Structure formats: structure tokens, C-alpha cells
Length: 306
Image (tube, rainbow, N blue to C red; front, side):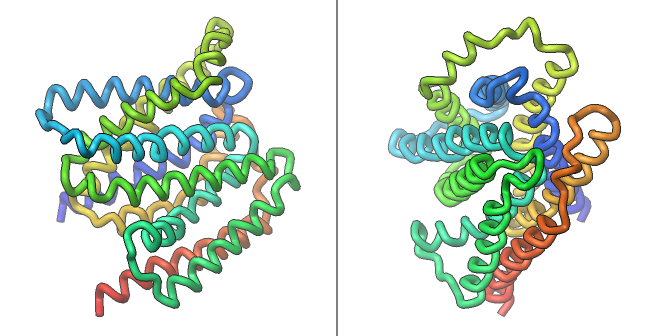
């Protein structure tokens, strides 16, 4: 029971860190770092730390035939996912990004149907339709607030699709290898693809790191160590005790956590104030997405319980 409790705490802490990231990372871009440069720093730091732990603790080899699938996971789980998330976050509000990310479980169901031939019940279909409606309405209203952006919201939505595709593709690898081995290779391929993306190195060498103040440097270090490296380690720990469906359910807390940290960090002066982007209309769309996700998730639960 204690291990399960610790697992729940770990997964909650992961989502709390993700909630903070929506607010903290927003304050770094694009004034001090271009999104692509931020991704490069994040990927480099996390990959380096993952390899250190793997070489010290795990002596597991990966078969050559699985490298292509690992490369695909790196492409969608790190490169495309992070490029669209950070570029989207630099344009839109942290509130919008937190709400749109909750549609991820719905996308996983849809992609699992096409790629893994998993059944989609009528209840799941209704849930997908409702959740998609909420996400589309939220995206169409973008631009109404000072920190909103249609393009930014669209980027966040593409990011959610990419991460959903990664979750589907990585399933067979997680069954075959230890999670830390998979994550290390996924980040390694992801970092390689980020570096091959033409604007990344160009923007990196154009960045004037000497003008970045110490408080922004601390935010960058925080994102690398805690939001990237630590969250993946805690996720691995949590998945040892909890099912993926239970752990993924915590993503529904992210909009509330983003709102909480938007108010809290803004009041403390740690992050910029984006409270004007919080509206009752967005709250309504968030509830629509929640309803769609609930119908989709509970469908799987009820089927397994029967």
C-alpha cells in the first residue's frame, strides 16, 4: 500500500511540474531563448543525465531491428512534440496550452484504433466527438485575449497528436525493454533530429547567452532538471505500481494546476501575469473536454470490469 501511495504522489508531482512548466517556460521565450534553442538545451541536458544513469545502473542492449521504432518514438515523442509545444507556448497563453493538452487521451484512443486495431465502442465515439468539439471551440476562440493565438493553439494541438502517436508506438518497446533504456534511446534520437532541424543550430549560435539574467538561467535549469529529467524518472517509478490508464488520468488536473500556478507564480513575481487569459468561456470548453475524456476513459474501465 505504501508503494502505491508513493506512486500516486510521484505521478501527481509529475503533473504539477508539467503545470509549472506551462508558466515558467512561457517567461523564457521568446525574449531570451528561441523555442528551438530551449528545446536543444533541454534535450541535451536530459539525454546526458539519462545516459549517465543507464551506464551506471543498466547493462541492457537494444536489438538492431528495434532501432527504427525507437527512432520513430524519438521523432514523435521528443522532436515534433517539443518543437510544436515550445513554439506554440511562445505564441499562445499557458492557460490555453494546459487545456488543449487534456485531449491527449482521446487522441491515444483514436490512434490505437488505426495502429493497434483496438476496438472503439459507441461510448468512446461519443466521448471523442465531445472532447474534440471542446478543443475545436477553444482553438476557434483563440485571439480574444492578450496572450491568445490561433497559430499557437494549433501548434499545441499538433504537439498533443504527436505525443499521442508516441504513446502508441512506444507500447511494444516498454514491454520488451526496461523503461529507462527506452527513454534514453528515445531522447538520444530525439536530440539528433532536433539538431538536424535547420533553424536549431543557427538560432543557437545567434543567441546572446551573456544577456540572459540569472533568474532566467535558473528557470532554464529548472526545466531541464525537474520538468524533463526528474519527471521521466518519476513516471517510470509510478508506472511500476500503477496502470497507464490510472497514471494518464492525472493529466486532467493540468488545466487546474496551470491556473493555480499562473495566479501563484504571477503574484510572487516569478512569472509573468497571464490571468487575463482565464475566462469563463474557456472554463466551459475545458469542462466539455473533461466530459469527452471521462466518457472515453470510463468506457475502457467498464469493459475491463465486466
